Image (cartoon, rainbow, N blue to C red; front, side):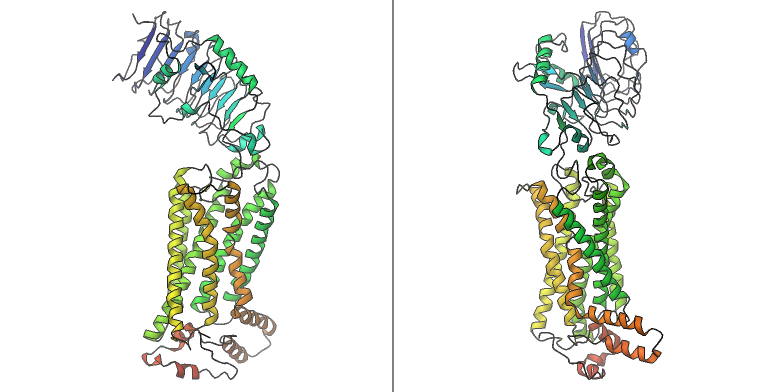
Length: 629
């Protein structure tokens, strides 16, 4: 006959007959770990004294409905790492104190599952229900967390609250579909609460400083492969070799008294700047700054796009790229407006919608637009700098610059690369839902799996900026030597240079935060990081068009042509309109010939002589100024 306590662990046992443990009235503890071929729960008829049952890492799919009738003395049931999908009612297990169901496939818990379990002290469900323990600092004896339930890493959508009012410990992490908020009235005796989303902790405190990180279940943070229920049992109850789960009434009383001394609820994960309870934008300065960025970026980039693509003047390659950058910046303004709209609609009670926003399609669309716009703007700016340099070299060597068609093809490649970068987080390479800002950049206490994508993205952007800087330094050195002095559009050269300077300068804080988070170099508060992501990161989207509208003479010429086109439409002969369009396309305050005009007129090898080309344009009011001036 088996002894009072039987442990079958670290053995090659793969299968045990269903009736192997029947009619063992003196058996108190049965531990069987790793019998992967067991598909059905064993028939324990006649084993009425069994108090501790551990069947882990098997293939059990369901529990018999009469289990509690066969085991009236059952106090501890550990069924972690199985394939259990449905739970019966445990209302007849009146003595049940510990229930472990983590790492199963539980999708639903019925309302009567845990009814009348007055003795239940600990329940874990990380992918199921598991055991959680805490140590008494006064006695040095491990104590079982009173009235604890752990349902982590399962597929729960809802949690019935019937019969759970007496819980003091509840663990629900790893159930992403369980986003419903809880109230204090749901768990009046709760001491330690671990939930899938930080927003569910907002009901238990008014500010982030209220929340403290729970250490009661740190022993449970082991990976499934490292977790050994039997060894954990031996550690928790040393000295009880016969029955490792005998609970000392004095220890339990001490634990209950400790709960009275520490009435505050320890809820994790804790809310904070990236998991706000009340407002997505917690500062009015940030809120007003974001709205200002949205208004300026949408209106000004719209004007730039209208002036570049709707104007009757000649569309040069550089000018086309400037308009394309404005389109990318417009997308940035749209993505920011989606965040601002969420902040407005959830003002004062963001916690009620935070989990659904992070995991919803709206957040993914916002993140996709944000990454697509930012990467497209950087890639197109790189293309603009390279195009300016290549145009100068091609005019010197071949008498013509790259055609507009080639530049358009290169711009399409840039957009394709940007779309690929924006799509990757949708396939779990990076993550948009790590924070309500829907950005794939690292946040404090974020998942380390997102760092690889973020570092790769930042390194790519830094390589682009280095390429831009080197290209333009080389270009300016050639200009200072007096080369191409009569065949260059200085207005566009200066504009691209200003774009390079502002975008590089504003991207430095983002790169600094990324590498600081990766290498843990500096301690930066979450409030600062959030401000950088909300204000500094989209700031180029409103500065880029302002530089074009305020300082580039091409905008004034294009705007004047658009206005004249609207006034004179249908009133002037076709020949007059054509002459005015041709003359105005070359009328700039810099009064210089664009490289694309050379592409237009220099089709033969003998066109290398610049002066005859310029003489062919007979505009008395035009004064040619060398570029270096």
